[in-house]
Image 1 (cartoon, rainbow, N blue to C red):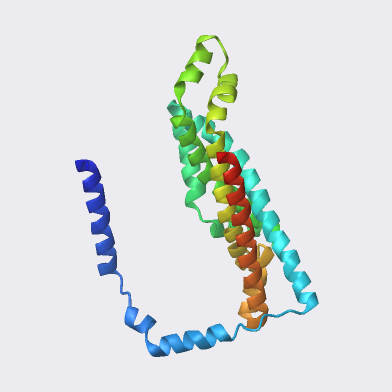
Image 2 (image 1 turned 120 degrees about the vertical axis):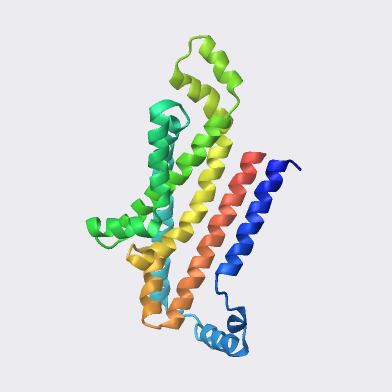
Length: 251
């Protein structure tokens, strides 16, 4: 093992130990008999889930709304991420400026973006969708830029020596090499955005999250259980679709 690698691992171990030491983690209280009994009573209050046809239809519509928010937000982020990744993978002032924008976009959590956008557009799926797009643009832009930087330069160099322009070099040399990575990163972030879209509803950004916040706030536990089951089913469906798409890309 190289000395630098050993030093990094040692530093991470020291950080973990210091974190445990500095935080007041009361494991005994969390896992005590009274706490476990209270948790069991609270969990049992969720069942049985609400199965009234009208409520199931409302939950199904919210599920589709959450799915649409995540899909549109991810699609917008792919475009924004690509536009920022190209200069971020270059050199000079453009690289520094693009990296700064990417850092700013992904440093602000989706909930903060949604809260800011709610002031502009009001309640509904629009602020949630735009919040996902802004944050995910920062994440995908950084990942895309690193993929472009790590692409093999031989093909691009050969095209440049033949007088091919920069745009066509990227289109015919860099993009084909990095496309599987770009798709994989996009699918992964779509999975994350499904979960994030569910959370964004808590601040009134529509979808299952808004239903969850409403019914849980009123202690309507059976309705809350139905919404949670819908969330789990949606995440499982998207995970399965993403896994199938990744298998197709690697074959």
